[in-house]
Image (cartoon, rainbow, N blue to C red; front, side, top):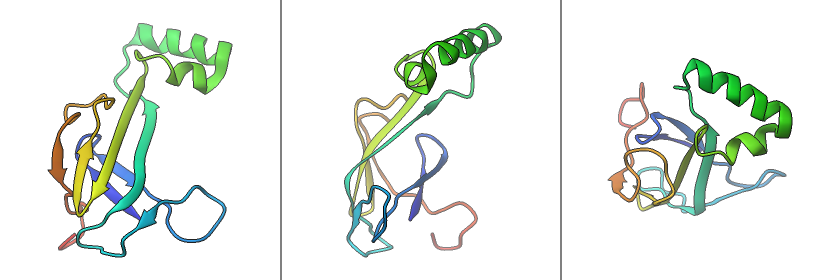
Length: 113
């Protein structure tokens, strides 16, 4: 499963069903989905300045991706609950929708969602 996140402006993929990956439960409703537990997406900012990239590369060499992801200067965080077709963004998000609840948008390029 995937949904378009308006805070990150990208797709977030949710693994449901059987298999070896971490899984989320899904209520089976494609129109008003609920996924449990919360969805945490961590990444690296894509708007780093030239000096930041050099520091980023140094931090990556010293401690790997966990060291970089632990540094707020480099990381992005999107943490949410999707319940009954609404996305509730938690306060640890680094985007402008933190602390807000918004309707799950249609997938871009898909008629009717």
